[in-house]
Image (cartoon, rainbow, N blue to C red; front, side):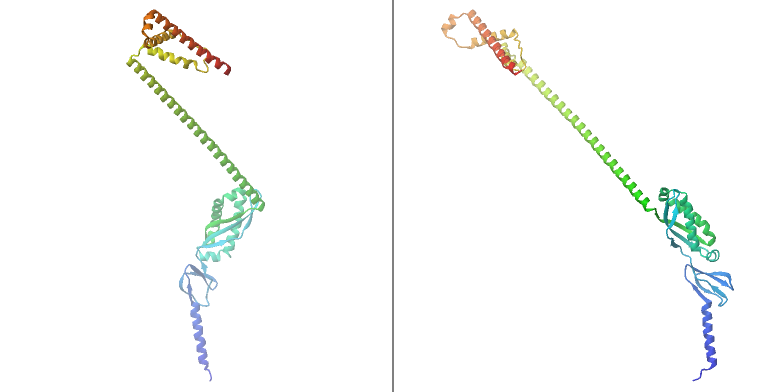
Length: 337
């Protein structure tokens, strides 16, 4: 079967037409942009959606991502002010705002941003010592962002954030820092232990003080109550004595009973018997003589003067007995001393 030349030509023309239409229609995704050159000159930027270009005349470049991008650069060695080499790892957040400038103002904006970040980082860290570098990340970030944003503005790029991911000092410096940190922790632990012991001693002393004060107050209250009780008892006895109006003979007898108690004290080496004792003993002997029963012969034979003389003799004998008791008590106490 022979194929007609006209049929082949028609098929070729149809394929060429389909290919031409395909090259003329360009669909750009959202948040993307594509630059178009017409005969080698920039004409326009294709926006997201359906776009038409002239086939074989317009050249469409690859799409540029307009979203915010994150780029992590490898650690870079940086020398600090005190001549220590540290490796700093940075993370850059940037966004393409002008596709035309990003394509025609710089050959490779990503490489340019990386090199600019490294040089700026060395300038900023070179004026700081190691301790300031480790504790001033926010300052370094703000300075980097300011320099990068100013330099990349003409490239159609906006730098949003610059973060330092890691700062690695040399191993020897790390060991020294660990030793210093351990020493600081031991120091704080010792200070806290001393403060706790001091506080414990203060609280113990305050507790002992309060206990002693309360104990003294209790003893004082007990003595006051005891003295008040004794005073009340003495007052009751005194009131009872005056209320009952006792006979002098009873008082003399009570006085005589208290004499042995006065002589029984361990420290009584000298004892004085007042003159009233004899009178009291005479009254007591007289009282007993009046109470004792007597035979009629005795009552008639002994006159009142003889009875009085006998009572006096009895009182004298009682006095001598009391003196003998006192002497015996002194004799028993002397060897003990």
